[in-house]
Length: 318
Image (cartoon, rainbow, N blue to C red; front, top):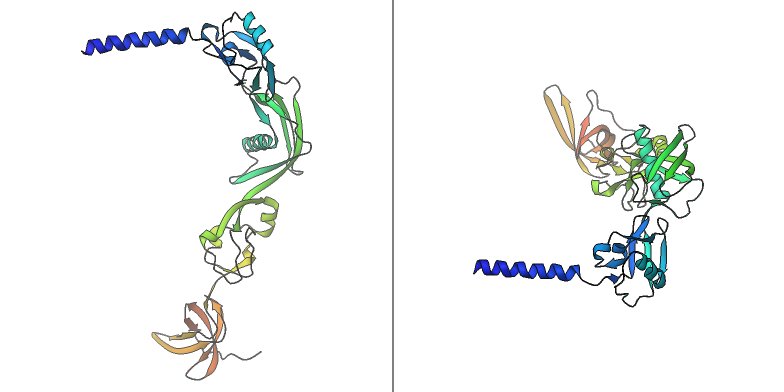
């Protein structure tokens, strides 16, 4: 039984291979190639033994052309392909793949060159602005070296660059020049926040920002911001500077607090009412509820005020 099935499967496979080998080539309505030459296998399904035979030159990299049926038939005849199905087509769309040389490509290339020359620090990227636009340039994607940097010069002081590139498929090198702006990661507020709000980690987004602006305002790390209180309202997407945050108040005006007075091993406590808001380690004026006199202390925690060692200082009105 097993041998019979195996023999049957072999006969069927051989038959299918034979049918495929003798299948009629069918003209494709649209093709994409990445080489200079369009072959029979590119233009026809079931091309068979003629698959690798050249038909005609492909268009320039990154361009599209329409080949009339008459031209296809003439090229097929020269290639020795006689019997095929035109599938009712009057022309074939032929596209040549290519590497697009645009602003994004140049920006990536400049970043790679700067990194190779150790002109970019960790976390830095270069924003590139070209002096002249690039007009639909494509390099041959089938080449071993589609784009080669022939020359690259950068002015560290002027933040300008010039480069000369060899593009596969083009006879003349491409000359480009422009300006470089170094970007570094900086904190931005994700959504609008009101003055006095406490920043959480989810409120902060790291985004690229101008290195010159960031360094002029002072470098800020996320750990410097989380848990801090905003000194002013910020709209969503605004950068956060150190001057925008402060330690949050742990005592609010009119809060009941505990006064701690320590002398040697003895610690005395008394209840008081805060006359102002204050953060940890900030001075605060409170009203001693026993003496009904204002006194100054230092905030040591939520609801806790320490009286400095020595005679208690009674607050006076300014």
